[in-house]
Amino acid sequence: MQPPLPASSTQYAQQLRQGFRWLRFGGALEAEYRAYCGRNEHRRVLWFSAICLVVWGGYSLFDLWRIDVALLDVRQQALLMSLRAVRVAVTAVIVLTLACALWRCPMRVLQAVLIVLGVTLSCGAAFAVYVYKVLGAPHETAVLVMVMLGVFSPFAVSLWVQLLVALLYLACVGALAWAAPLPEVRAQMLRLEVVLALSALVFGFAAYWREHQRREQFLYRGDAHWLAMRDALTGLYNRRMFNHHIGQLVAQAQREGQPLALLLMDVDYFKSYNDSHGHQQGDVVLQQVAQVVLACIGRPLDLVARVGGEEFAVLLYGSSAEHAQALGQSLVAGVRQRALPHAASPVAQVVTVSVGGAMLSPQDQPRTLYARADRMLYEAKNGGRDRCCWAQTLQA
Ligand SMILES: Nc1nc2c(ncn2[C@@H]2O[C@H](COP(=O)(O)OP(=O)(O)OP(=O)(O)O)[C@@H](O)[C@H]2O)c(=O)[nH]1
Image 1: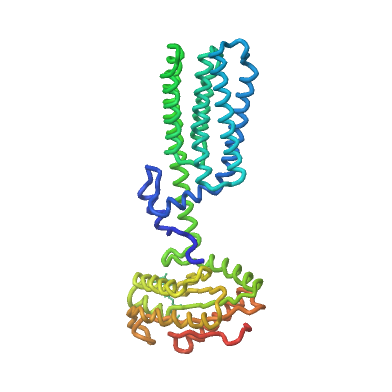
Image 2 (image 1 turned 60 degrees about the vertical axis):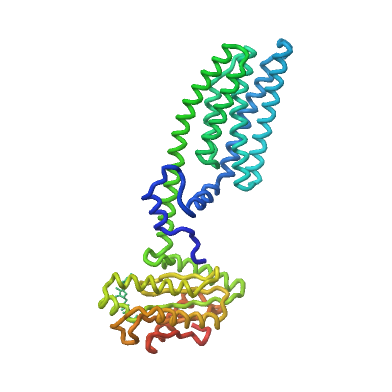
């Protein structure tokens, strides 16, 4: 359980200070951001592809109804058939995207399908305009700007991928202009190319700021979340998180019949240390002590918190009494071995700690377990400090 957050507060704050104008974070933050973005993507893509299906399907049905094949010559009929084949292919890609979102397929697959959808949908729409122009049928070029909106809407892909799709789209319109059999069709496709290039610029700019804002929100949220859960000096959990976890772990241990140990640790004569070495140096000692504790625990469910000024708590889930007692001794020895000079301490010439520990009993509440460990801590203090005392009985 320690630490559950991959990045530290300073990493979020540092990235905010550094900026991210290329829409990319450094180190592990980028992976964390992508995982954060991926949480609700399936639902968004589901809605997006459902809307695409309605719009694209609606236009396809409308075209089936309005164009009379009998009035076309053989070449025109072949062109219309190829458009219908394109319409079916695009509809299939939309349905595939819908299915991927519905069955919550892996993000990588969803992203790949969205790219294919972006390319086929936009190029399919450009091809439709081309065919109508060649057939002399009326068409609405504004639909293509809507397609551009569709290219820049999907949330699951980055802006760079969206721009790539837009470029492919523009290349497709350019190719159609080049292949156009009539000069007026070519001119129409070239005009379209200019309109689309301008709209890609506008939509791309808007998409840039949307992603920039999203990334900024992620960093602020990450920083605030980290600070709400952690002690800023040591990076350990704070008292609030400790209270939350002890309640959960006590309930879980009692439900599953697992042992749970609580150790409370307090730096000895810390007031004298601050008085003689200064508060800043005192802060360094607290950080060193936190490192000792972190070095001593290693199992995934072990939890360490700074629960007071110079007081730390360790929760060991599933740990035997022997293991917990040995760990208490290691904490005392570990801090002593750091050999942090403490000339004002009557116990030793170095910083020492006292530890009190207790095992959870079946009738315990979080507060009774805490009270028992706290009594042991006082016993360790009264017994001369620089030691670990353990509750002999399970009763509070
Ligand atoms: N440097 C520093 N000091 C702190 C911090 N939080 C609390 N303290 C100090 O910790 C000291 C705790 O003193 P006491 O509670 O009297 O305990 P003690 O001097 O360690 O004595 P014993 O616990 O009986 O051994 C106080 O002087 C606080 O000002 C902190 O974040 N940094």
